[in-house]
Length: 251
Image (cartoon, rainbow, N blue to C red; front, side):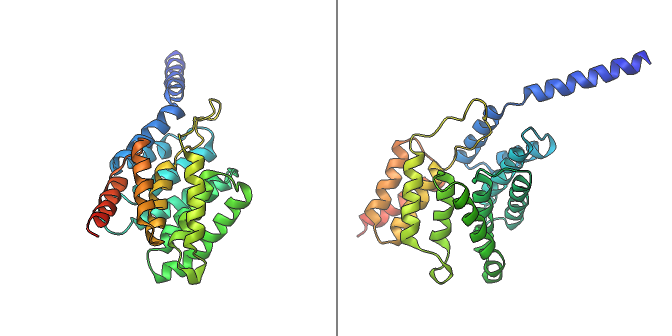
């Protein structure tokens, strides 16, 4: 009996230490660093940590798993995104919503995941396009001024064909608004360090693409140079800027 009590006490202490060791602030910093570096293996590892060692609040634990799957889907080294990771993104974003995360963040991420799946083929577009729009409509209803909600809606406007509701000019407005709201970054509330602050990199990059599609290459380059001046660097932004600057110099 004494040995059993010692074992239980040891297990409890180990569990308590593990819980105390986890830091949402440290986790979000590691996530941001992996996104900037484009390190898929780091994103996959972080997602596995949140799966195997879920932390409170559970709805936000699910949200971050969805976000990490979303990011990892585009770092597989292929021309097309990893559909399995996008489907995992949908599943975990839906879990966040089902568990009560109703700030608009999870609905926006769900809309992004569905939207990217819709872009993988004609049949996928028919299957997922309306789901993406429904999730984004709900996100806009819940939090019309949230920068990541505007970002997700703008991305959907940019890549959805016009005959299915896409609108490049509306995309430019929403992405510009998201970029401005995200300028300079944002600090998490000390009491809610799990709340996301990502999006500045995405807003600059997709806004540049919107300007390019609107045949305003000078403004596209300006946005990318603003991103660089703000310290927003990634292989994606760097490659886009080099391409646009090269096209401009060859004219």
